[in-house]
Length: 110
Picture 1 (tube, helix red, strand yellow):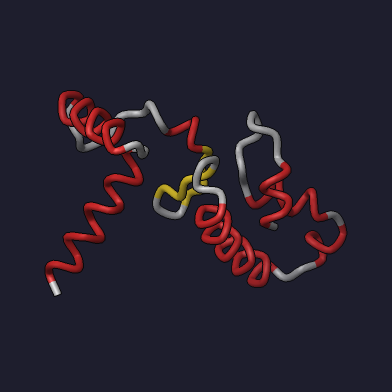
Picture 2 (tube, rainbow, N blue to C red):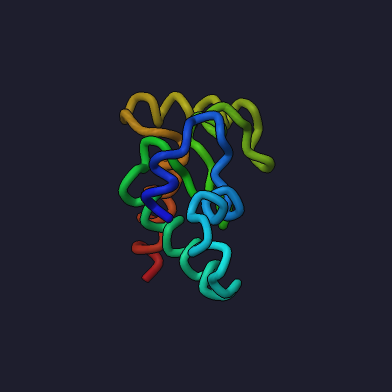
């Protein structure tokens, strides 16, 4: 599944159905449970190895370009602008900066 995801063109939204279709008979004959487990594993692997192209937003796999400019639901426009500016200064995406801040906060709470 990871190999199929890396070969998808940028305009295609990554989804389990698209990947299973590209896998052919093997993907269509596998059990739903196995397909879901492989998809979840592939999501984690693709984000870990290709973080420049893919982002895991909760449980939804998205392209980085598709979510870079969207505003957070519970984040004001000014706060989003400040976050984007700080991330740009650090040379990373706002999502990557937030994940580092959250993991740092969790380590401090222990």
